[in-house]
Each structure stands twice: as C-alpha cells, then as structure tokens.
Length: 417
Image (tube, one colour):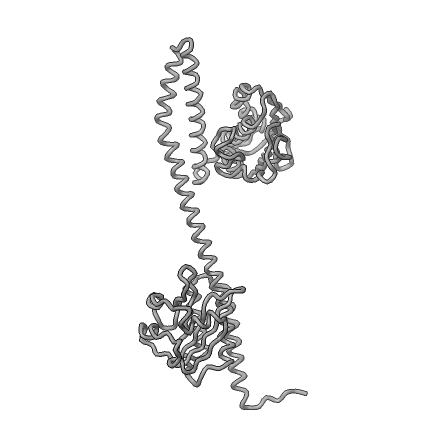
C-alpha cells in the first residue's frame, strides 16, 4: 500500500532533500580540493547555511602543544582567532574532543565550561551551541561547532547533519595536510639537490686550475727525471690523472642533472663505439692482468646514438667491471642486434651484487660497501652517469647478478639505426 504524505510534511521533506543535496555537493568539492584554507572556509560556510545559524567554526588539535586552536570561523579573521589557545580540560570544545561525543547547549552562555576569552576577543556573544567531534580513523582531529541557531534551538537532526559534515571534513583536512607535507618534503629535496649540484659544479670547476698546474709541472719533470725520481713523478702523474677523471665525472653528472648535456646522434656501427671504449680501458685492465673477451660479430650492427657520450657510458661500465674483478679474471664485452634495438653487455667474474642492490647501484654516490671499510675506490657516480646518458637517448640499462661473489652483468639497450 502506498504511503500517504500529509500536506504539512512536504516542506519538511523538501528541506531534508535540499540538505542531502548540499551534503553531496560538499562531499564532491571536498574530495577535489587540496588547498587547506579553501577547505576550511568551505566547511564553515556550508555548516552555517545548512544549520541556519549565525556562525560555524573549526578547532583543530595541536599535537606539539596539547590544546585546541581555531583554524577557521565564519566571518572572523583566522589569524586573530588562532591567537586564542583553547584548553582541552576546561572548555566546551575540549569536552567534545575528549569525550568524542556531540554536545547541544541551548543556553551556552550559562555553562561553566563556556570559554569566555574567545567571545571577548572577537566581540561575539554565544547563545546556543552545537559541537561535534571530527573523527579520522580511530582518533579525533578536532571539533566542528555551530553557534546561535537563527530560529529555535539546535536539535538531534542538526547534530546528525553537522556530524556528517565533520566526518567528511576530517578526511579532507587530513588529505590536504598530507599533500602539503609531501609538497614541503619535495621542495626540501629539490633545494638539497640544487645545493649538491651547485657544489659539484663549483668544486669540479675550481679544482681544474690547480690540477692542470700539477699535471703540467709533473709532465715537465718527467722529461728530465732519472732513477728513483722517475717513479715519484709517475706516481704524481697517475694520481693527478685519476683526479682529472673524477672531475670529469663530477662535471658530467652536473650536466645530466641540469639537462644541459648536448647529445649529437649519428648513425654508425655499434662495433665502433665498443672499440673506442676498449681503447680507453685496455691499459687499466692490463695492469690488473684482466683478459678482455669480445663477443660481437664482425658484421655491422648500426645504432643511432651520440658516439662520444655513449662511449663514455660504456667506459664507465667497463671501469666498474675492472674495479670489482679479481686479478687474472675475464671481462666480456658483447653486442647483438634485437630488431629495433641493439643489446650490449659487460660481464665480469668479480665480487657480484646482492640481489636487493641491483637497482640501487645506479643511484648517485651509492656504494655497496660501507664508506669507512670499502676496498674499492671511486665516487659512486660512474653508473649514474652511464644510466643518464643511455636513457637520455631512449635506451635502457640494468644490472644482473646471482649474488655476492658470483660476478655481474650490465646490459644496455640502444636504439638501432
């Protein structure tokens, strides 16, 4: 049987329907807004409209100083309100916060828990008050209050409506806080990275001049050195050359980080690049009695890359293999065509990489060993530079290893011509 709605109930039903529509609109807006100040103003304005009262306010909990503070209020200056700390143990808002229950007071001014300093500070007289907690998961983050009902007193229906607003508001405010904290953390990281990049750039630039002088004098002395002096000069030259290589790496890293590295792609056989890289490292490998094994065919395998930068990337991979290889072991350099790409690999029989560190080895300044006890030299940026150069050309690089002591293989995919 159909339920008959009396004529006198129609305005009441229409009012509830309007309230529900407003609550749905509020929920949609809250879920799409991450600006905290905008959220707070929207919540108080909606609460004031739906409950037909003079004002609404939001008090949030301050974890650093256990108290409540006004975050927003209808028609009031938030900065002025924020100056008033609201105690948790002796205020109406504190009671709502502690008990986690709504509170209706239709004679608020006479209640001993009414915190008068707020009304005195903003010249506002509180007559009736409805307050509800703002729950987030299993905690209360604050209190939402409606003040001075315009027609009659606050009732349980008002409390239910305000509780719905408070629940949605708590989630939205929490999301906005998390977003703001994330943005601040990202900005801090950005500033830190900028300082680090500037330092690397400045250091590599400032050290080049004295290093050039050392290399110049050492080369001059080498020409006239005899006997034991020759060994001393050779040691100086070797150390200075190593320092020069480190400065080049620092410079390349800053260029990659600032997107200022120029890439001039040309079509050429990948074998040419591999041979360029081998020429760079063959003397270093020979000093450790390492055997270089070539595993690429004579037939041309064309690629479309910057020859100089790609050679640098492969030199860094080969130097990494030399650094972690055992004396008199083998290092294999190979290449094979794979359709639209060319696979290049550098394989060693050295100390290997723990499985959980295969991605981390490409991070800036990362060292598998602790810095104070490591056995291998280097800044830990060679692999970072190699990865940056290869990926900037549309390629890919990754490491494979069966674990510590089992050797490692670095694989590179380059775009074929």
